[in-house]
Image: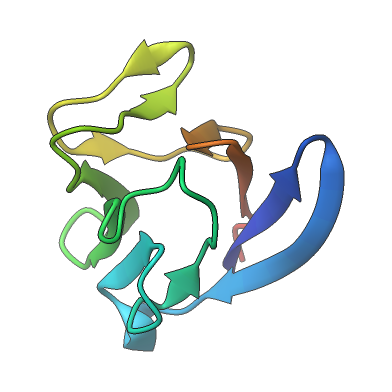
Length: 102
C-alpha cells in the first residue's frame, strides 16, 4: 500500500491512500483533482501520479509550466519514480511518500 502524508507549514493535515484503481492520481488546486491543495502556490493542475504496472512503481509527472514540483531539492521536468520516504513539494505543501511493501 502507498500513501501521501500531507503537511502544510509543518502541520500534518492528513494521510491520503494511493490505490492503483485511482491511477492517474491528479494533484492541484482545481476541485476536479484527486487531491485538492487549495493554495495559490499550487497550480490548477500541478502534478500527476501514475502507477506503472510493468515496473510496479509509482511515477510522478510535473504538469505545471509555471510552478515547480520539487523532489530532493530539485525541480523535476521528467517523470520520476517515487521511493519510500521521498518528499515531494507542491507549492507550500510537503507530501511524504510512504510505500509499505507486502
